[in-house]
Image (cartoon, rainbow, N blue to C red; front, side, top):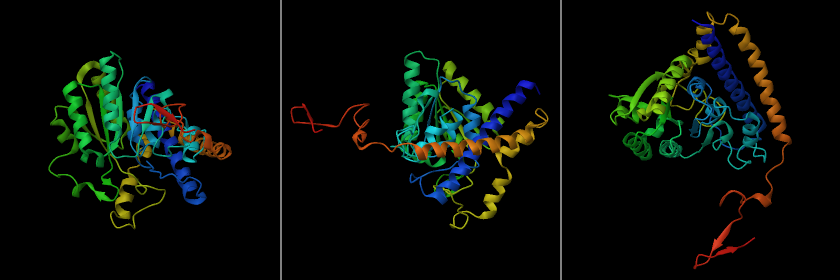
Length: 343
């Protein structure tokens, strides 16, 4: 194992620790302070999926996500302070305080957006990737979504279109076994996996241990380069597990759909601990680094919260900015198609 491999492993562990620290601290503040009123979906326990995939991408590649968006946003390099301000509804937020937790964006680093509607960003990612192909850009679009999204018609339409046109898109399914509180086994056929069904479209597909960041990184790298080189779309089914409730900061082992024992079993396979143990032969001081990162990133989050609380709320005068295009005011149209300004 080379020094370069050790450095790459350490970077991915660092990024997973950062996401874990940020989300754990946000979850506590969300519950106790009651200042973030946006619905929030945490990825605690799923950090390896976002980090492994995004570490395999180029800066010019773009990422789209669904409602569980914090991890891919941060893994792609999104501005933490802008994210925290967005959760607080402030003007300095990445969506100017209008989008909340499920509508993050940082186009400067290639995180082109996330949205709340199930499977909504899948066709958007396919469209972006198709534009790359049509204009000869050597770029890839990636879309993150959960196992529930593959039950939507737009998912199948998007996969079919991407396969027909050999679009350079990577579909990343974070299969955490539940759609809200409905287990996978009662929603989808048990005789096949999601990746096997997607392969029937002629799409290159892989079933990967989503809590093994190195395995995710290797599969994502192969998928992205294959798509980039004209091989068409790729699909990754990353088997993982969220520790907290579907939406919100709490635990849900008493909600009747999964047990504390099941959660504990998945927590025992924590992706950060697994990656740290695997990296020790290459990076002997990795455990000490993790401890240092833990303290640093929790402090970084609290500084971001302090800045968010001090930031202004969006002004009423800017309420409709963006509704009809950047910087435009709302306009009605008369029956002849002429704009009527009601400012």
